[in-house]
Image (tube, rainbow, N blue to C red; front, side):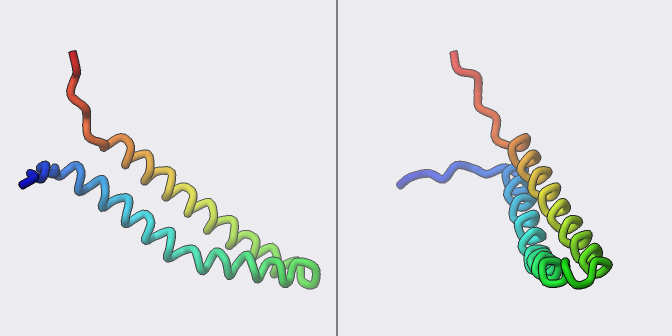
Length: 86
């Protein structure tokens, strides 16, 4: 029977962080899409409302990008270390 390699706490933290980041991005995605759609609906008729919708869209998109970049960076930094080979 094949043996299962032991998993470390570092590995659990690594995957948990990545999954939680994806959950946060997934939670923000509908709001971002809604702000984008609203912005395109009113951009020619009401510039002040379009500015607010654009700001909301931009803030959500930037926040999602930052969350993903940080999570992927930590995921990469916490990867298992390979033993030195001769």
